[in-house]
Image (cartoon, rainbow, N blue to C red; front, top):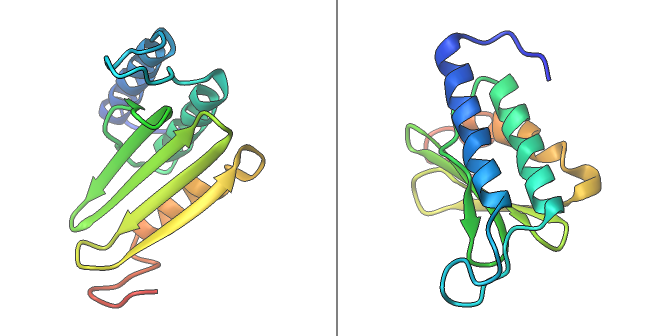
Length: 135
């Protein structure tokens, strides 16, 4: 992956990849409740999403294992937030909120996961909601 970004953004990206590497090492029941660890597919999708967010200049919070099985990534800018869940069964669910009472849910498969970072970029840049207007 090659993107021209400043050192602080690159540092956050590398920290996110390190956290993702930790998630890959989790075993069954990692949360004490018998939850499956993130699958290899979920980790690959999360790595792709992280790289695409980085290339678009976004600083997501560190990826975290999901109790539903997979990897969760959160991104917040101003009053907008996005939660991206890369699921063990090969789908990505994206929940986007404008900070008011509306949200958008987008589901994608591993085959069309390039859609997710594009939508996030449009959404966080103000292209989906402006103020209190909803899509």
